[in-house]
Length: 508
Image (cartoon, rainbow, N blue to C red; front, side, top):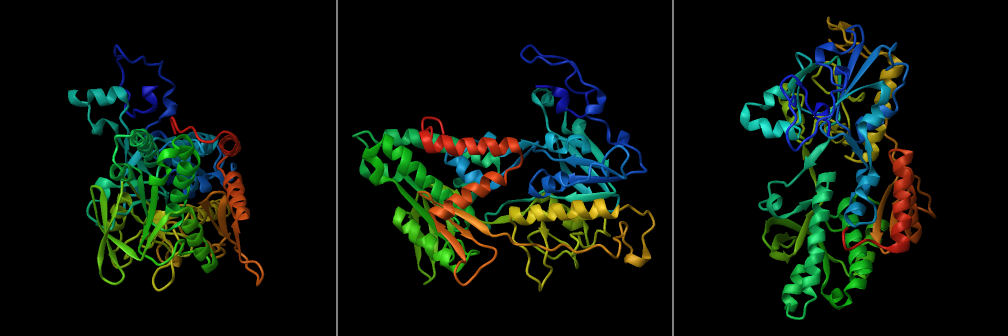
């Protein structure tokens, strides 16, 4: 590991090699310049926060001439995560069908020569001063020096901006339900998927223990009970991938315990995939019943305890759902950084509890035009308008739109507000078109080579794709919508490998 790639202040950090860590020769200081030494002030500095769908879509669609050495813009990307993650295939990664490394791409490779990337987390945004407070992560040597006077202050730096794109996403929502954070597994990030994969690896060892003759049937059933909370695409696909894993690979290796395995899906609504066409909702329920996946619909989770989940039913009665492994796959909450920024903006304008309210051009209300927001962090429909769903498809189109908006209109900061545009510091030209979302359909995998696709254009004879055809449409689109040709090839290779040889259940 190169410590200089992680440390901001090299004069205070990682200057002496230790006995167990070998440091390479420092690279040119240009690999991590101080904020003050970034290119000329005559350029408009565009800072992008995040490395998810919205941020990467924006970066990939930038005009190299506009963001090149002779262009009017200077690009800086700041994110603690140095890769872009293809989130729709996280359930498949947990199930062992695709490798985690197949669905990530380096953010440095994506940025390329268009700008500069800092692997750091932003802890504060000052919209009045147009400045960010950033903290570099501690490397191995820095972490060892924490107890000898080397603190986070040595890794903190300020970064001014002219235009800010906030694309930090959202975090898992527990809705204040007791026990969720302590007992449930989440599935929103690669870290979540890795932890869940390790847990399933341990669960498979428990499966081997459950197959021993001295293990009671009750203990065996408890060890082999999986509960997924959430009836949306993530919850449904997680349950489907678990079903495939247990039915195809684990049951083949340990057929004596297949009758003790159970998967239960819990959701507070009356159907699965509530945002899909009614035909798909009905079909998904039928497929899960055929799989033997137990559906506890209309059951609102009130608490999660060790070994069981408390739910409240529609008739007012209470019940419990036992589990050996509980996976929480429902809901998102406002990112802490977004909440900090919202608190600095006019409270009478920023009234949403989910994210930052934006105008039709995705400018944050109350930011005087200098801050744009996209993806899960943005709320696109100020009441009474309906907000767009927090999906990858929406974030991707928003990134494409903002890239075109900046490249075609050459936006620039004005130190003196423009009275013609309500005092905006970054005024938009009158010809600038607002963002318009085009729904391209929705897909979900249901297990056992069955899937669904909610078509964007419906006819009296064809509204959806279901069954084997739906699964192939899902697999094809999830492959070709990958981040890069490299990840596209890796995912395709994983599909073929799993189809021919199955999953590696010894180390999934």
